[in-house]
Structure formats: C-alpha cells, structure tokens
Length: 404
Image 1 (cartoon, rainbow, N blue to C red):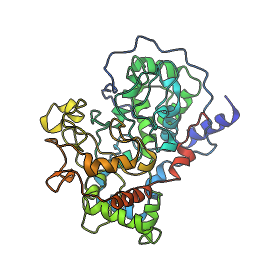
Image 2: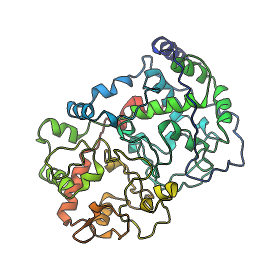
Image 3: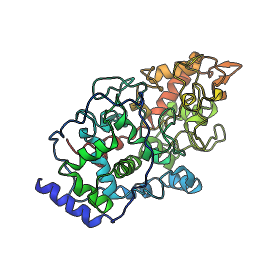
Image 4: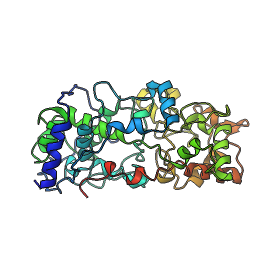
C-alpha cells in the first residue's frame, strides 16, 4: 500500500462516523435475462491502487452549494430529494462508492466497471446506442445519465423503472449476464473482501471491515446521489435575468415552455405560466411503476418499456423521462439510442412522431402527432439546450476515476 493511500485511509477513519447500514433488500437483474454467465469470478486482478486525496472530497456539502433558486425550489418540494433516511451521503461512504464505481474487479473477468458505461466527460453516459458488457455482449438499451438522480422525484430506476430504488439498482448491472457478469452477491463479497484496499475503506464508511452486498449498494448509491449538476450557463442566467443569453437561447427557453416541452422535461410542470423551471430533473414527480411517457417513436413497440414490467395496456411503450441537464453531451438519444444528434430529436418531435394509444398529449398538437416547429424554432431550442451543459461537472475531480 503506498504512503498516500495509507494517509488517506487514516483520515477516512478519523472523519467517518461509525455506523451500520446493512438493511436487507432484494436485488433484481439487469437488462438481460436472469441466467448467470457460464463463468466464475476471476482471480482479482492487480488493479492500480486507487489514488485518493489526503483530505476527503466534500460530498456532503453538495446540496448546500446549489444556487439559491434551486435551494428555494427544493425547500418547497422536499419530496424530490429521494435520499433515504437510512443511507445519507457521508464523505467516507461516497469515497468508497467512487472507488467501487470505477473498479473493474466488480465484473466477473475484471474488464468492466460502472464507469465503463457512465463516462464523466459525457455527463455519465457512454456515447453509444447500446453499451457493451464484460464479454462484448450488447445491452438492450441506451446508457441513461445518472446525474441528479438524488432529485429525481421518484425512487424507481432504469428506463422501465423496474428497480424499486437506487440501492436496489446499483447491484443489478453487476449481476447481469451481459453487463458485468458476477454470478452471485456472495461471489462479489468474497472477491472484494480479498482485495487489499477494500476492508479499510469499508471500515471507514461503515464502522467495520465487513464487505457485504448491502454496504456495496449503499456506498455506490451515496456516490451516485452526490453527482449533481447546477453550474451551467442557464443557472448563471437565472441569477442575472438571462443577460448572458443571446437571442436564440432566450427564444429557445421561451419555446421550451410554450411548446410544452417543459411539461415533461422539467420539474414545475408550468409551461406557458411565465415561471422559470429549474430543469434539475424531468417531470417524473409522483411516478411509480405504472406511469411514464410515450413519445411516439413507434406505432407498436417491440420494447414495451414500463409495460414490460406492469403488463398494463396504458404502460406499453412508455419509459422513464430523462433530465435535460447536459443533454448536449449525452448523445445518442432515446431509450435505444436511435437518434445521433439533437437535430434528429427535434425532427422527430416536429414531424416524426407516430400515433400511439399511449402517446403523451404534449406530442399530439394540432389534431395529429407532432409539435409545430419551424426550422428556426428547432435551432433556437437546441441553442437553449446547450446552455444546460455544466462544464465543471465533467472535470470535477471528486467524480473522476481514482484508478487513473
């Protein structure tokens, strides 16, 4: 163990509150069928030792560092913060979560990590239509951004919302036979327990060296919930009455409201009211299994989305709505990554939407599927969407890969 890591771990012990948080839950499976891979966990590779700072990054203070307008909004809508009382963010817990998030030993053959499908420079997506797994298999769906999950307004995770909460979701890709391929949680625990740097990190985060799947899930969830985005040109604009916006960006914001885009892709559901949405999350408030959005991609969906889980006719072809924060960085778009550019997305919403019994009313304007938009309208909306990019997020060292 190098001297720098030793010092960091000593500090972890000093600042971490000794606690136990190993509530039992039932992890599900990932995007593929539930059968385990025909492989067993490889001998732990000799990964680079994680390079941790001498003083812990402050993950706890993130909420308090958000702009006043977001703070005020969250004070009015505290239910949007879905952090469970039993798993609050701690600096030691999120530090462990960061190491777990980027550690490829969590996959059966030491080739894939959570970070393999969630790249910081792409706002924690991966830039491909469907992600590849540990054995070069391809997943069913596009890698959704994990930014601002803490304020999602719903605990349910994945495009089809099949995971009850983030603590459940974090283990599902690890066990998935395409994504990371671990055959069981017991195998995961045994493997991590044999790696030199983990017992100390677990002790700092949870009070003892025990490596359990519940603790793995809790630490990963703490790290993911700490990843928030609120330092964009849009945030700066709200503080200055948008004096930093050009004409196209201002009109794009206006169109987002009057064309009803903000009804799905924001959090105030107030398009056309003159109020300023935060765009912190999408309008998944109150969503549980059984409510989502159909955006007219197909007349008849092969991928049933939420309907695949609930089997309800009203849920067929509906999917969780993603946040638009950093959307300029998260191409390709939609649950299957079918659109390579924002221009293609705009063209779909203008004239490509297909009639479907479950299509959102926002996409059925003028008596037919689609949103009336001129070429200039589309260009201005895209200009506005670029103002939601948070350049600090994609370079913030506390979210970076500690193995690099």
